[in-house]
Length: 248
Ligand SMILES: [Zn+2]
Image (cartoon, rainbow, N blue to C red; front, side, top):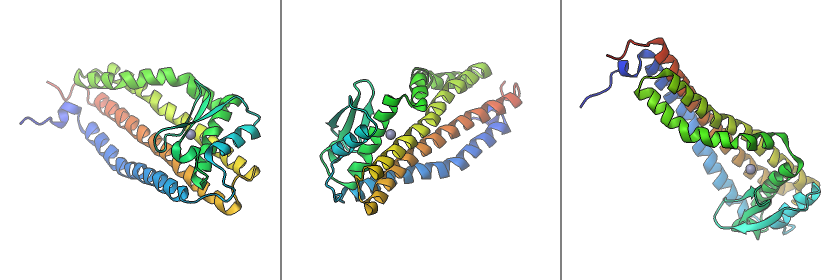
């Protein structure tokens, strides 16, 4: 069996690049797994706790919209677990079955967060407009970056590899802009929950935990994407430094 020598990859630079990536990958991977567990764990935990005002997810979402003077958004239920989302195309908040009809602390938190996204659209919140504007470029980037990186690597073409990196970085930028969008939706949610008294004081902590865990998954996704980008940049730099030295 033939094994690629370091020379094939481009020398010590690549060896180092791969190792830095592997070392950083462990904490980022652990953070991703931890965040996922936190989301499902906190959602399950606070789905068992009925809120004392008996406000369902649908009612809570409605309250957020009203509090922000938004009246033209539909609220519908959808299948699945943790499938809640706002769809700007049909201007509808979709709440899962365990949120829509259910008067729990978790349902109120999640529903208010999704309503927060609807409010962002209604008010023309800056980061969500930027995020929407770059969606086509991001989709293009995620489609073609991998093939360019692969061709660049196999043909030993630095320009193609660099183009692959640039296209891949669009995904990272998208995930970066997603952060303020998500944090802002949660902030609006909590403000309304407190302002409108949707939950009692001692119940708000549970809703905050659910939303904080959800936000952490976006942070983890961004870190993972940044790490991947770093890996490509290091490989690119390593190959540049040892150009012509590795391949016969
Ligand atoms: Zn969100």
